[in-house]
Image (tube, rainbow, N blue to C red; front, side, top):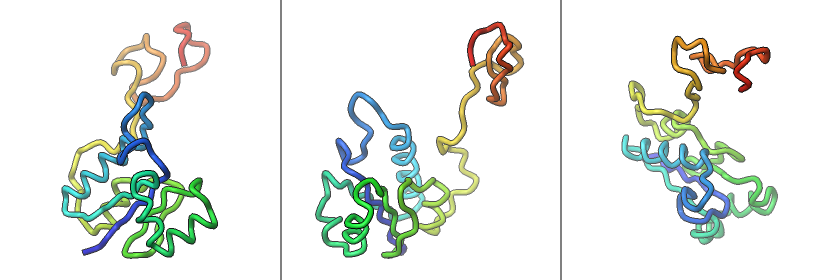
Length: 142
């Protein structure tokens, strides 16, 4: 089985989805990771604050930190090979790395934005497709 490890910067807790200000990237990544693991993948995440030993015992991760520092994190490795740095992998990337099929799943990936106006409404400031209306709009938004 393919092993995927995501090495993250120091977070307030193991998932980073705690505290007064949530980082949407962490919320989406946590959901994507759970989805891929539920589909049969094996993705492990390591938080620098809560799991520093994982960073110290892996030569490639330790060397990466010496060169890039914690600002270069997150770091994603697949079977010991670095595949992504500086950003969290998407659900699609995790599924591909884990060699699991998540196609046909309608679960959100956090990539789309909800429109601000209901479909068919001319009074809103954004169209149903999420594009911004012209600045001459009398609504005063967007």
